[in-house]
Length: 325
Image 1 (cartoon, one colour):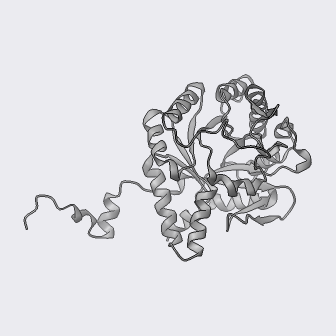
Image 2: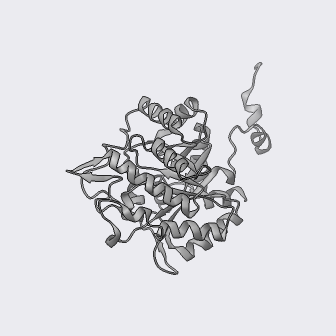
Image 3: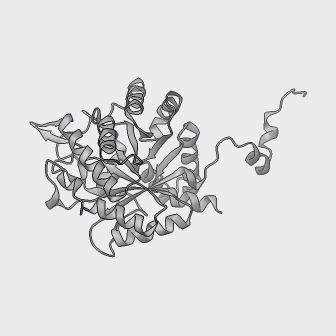
């Protein structure tokens, strides 16, 4: 049979497949989320995230050193606040001696070149487990934004390279940018969770930080997963307000949104390969239903292929190990 074009020619061997491969993963693609707890020499495995841990600060510093040695250059910090420090104002979030602030300083002292990003939202500090201040059973927007600005400035003072507002309050990016500028933190970046959907896949993360909402859900501020155009509107507004990087979260069920956002903006796009996505692969691999390493690489490649310039993922160390094999 005569064929003018045989597409399988460029699939014949690993050598030619690697030469023509369109999407290449490297350690530079990954942001490593870290969960930090009080105490010393504490390493607590998260039951719903096998192989992932909530560590005390001393253990975290050693982990960061290892990450840097592996070629991983960015971390995203989350802290578990003590119950007695939680209230409806979130004031512990901007305590200059708080766990987040101490963590930023310790990491920058230990590995100065590590790029430190910090979560900005009130849920770890809220007695209600919500991302904002609660009044009359409602999450209020403008007072929450004022708190987020204080939180962001506090992180910048501690040495954070970039703050990452994950709350989905209206107008918070512009307010945070204004607050940073007015306090002369002109080099502190903002990675906005611009299209953050109300998702069932966040469950293991909330286990990690004990931050599940105490009443209702988060659907009045996180996005409806049925919506696409809304994600573009939210993201474009965040860029106009001063976001340096925009994020789509979750990743796997929202690959189409990642591509839409990538096509709509001229800033880097990140995506969060979240805890539920991690847990699904871990559970299926434990059952022997899938090959874990192959699943990790296929999932991460799909997220980058969709348009993500950066991927926050709990698989970062595994991915680097696999890439180095």
